[in-house]
Image 1 (cartoon, rainbow, N blue to C red):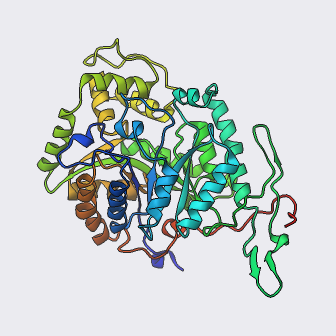
Image 2 (image 1 turned 120 degrees about the vertical axis):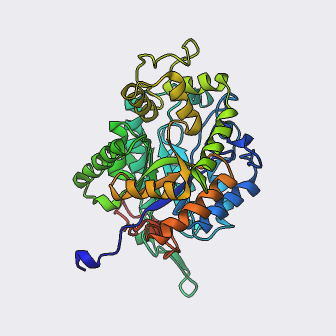
Length: 444
């Protein structure tokens, strides 16, 4: 195929689902969903995403409850349980759930996501996170590892999970009624992993999943996080605030891939964006103003303290951003926001307004055409392979994007008109990996 006849590059769209909306006060918007424990509301959100031909739903998670935090991080359904239910009412949309490499174990994680891949007929994705907030440790009776150690553990954890997924070859289940052979023993292998942090015999007690391996998602913005992503991730979520910064992150990640035998197209990079969409720019800005009117200064300082990993209660919101160290917890969030604040001489309140709107992610407010134009510009400038859409509230804030922006992207040939495959790997243009040979053959 010549360069001129090659298919046009198209963007990918993920949905970051927080049931009460990504805006900290999105649940207060008229007619907005105000629960993240309602499977009916979550199912409605998934149906909108599938109608919009999105690649996947992505559900973040946390392992503690803080009444002062974002409502969807305080009261929510467990991600894998929720997405297994959603798999029954959808047919194409990818289903991404978060599971911790610091407070989980490889065998349980590998088994759970292989199960979701079977249940969904090949639509599962694991968002592998190291768990940023140290508050989580108290719920597991542990000390919270520092940033570098969390990534050392994650490197071994992800490799072990992938090894477990590869313990079963294709066609290992024979189920031959004539001979009585159910499993071909030559196609099932022990893992025999004996590492620094984990010892796992294997194999899993579930056969190779429909995608070969579920898709792996990651969001680490630090140097160790980027190295882990370059080696193991299929999709990377990023925190950005301007296109130049996004282009640098994009190029840097793609440059890390060749030493691991990977091509630029093997990893899809999706910056997070909270679109506030109107039929006119004025309508969009009125929506954002309404959302911001619901937020108190108490919420402001609590959110800033959480994201910066520093008690901000003693600082003046209308004063300059103080000299504070980059947080060991939310490393990418704090580094991006602190850099932007110093670059643009922002006040602490300015930083808060950006964080309150989307917890440090990029806020894009305007008419549907303006939003589509901006996304196209970023995509064509190689600042992104697509976007992780973070609606400020549900369902109307998401309907606005799907009904007003997606058709424009489709008309311009920038986004699919319909699904052409059945699995998440199909949507992302990823091949089905062959199993790597593991350990010894298991007697069955």
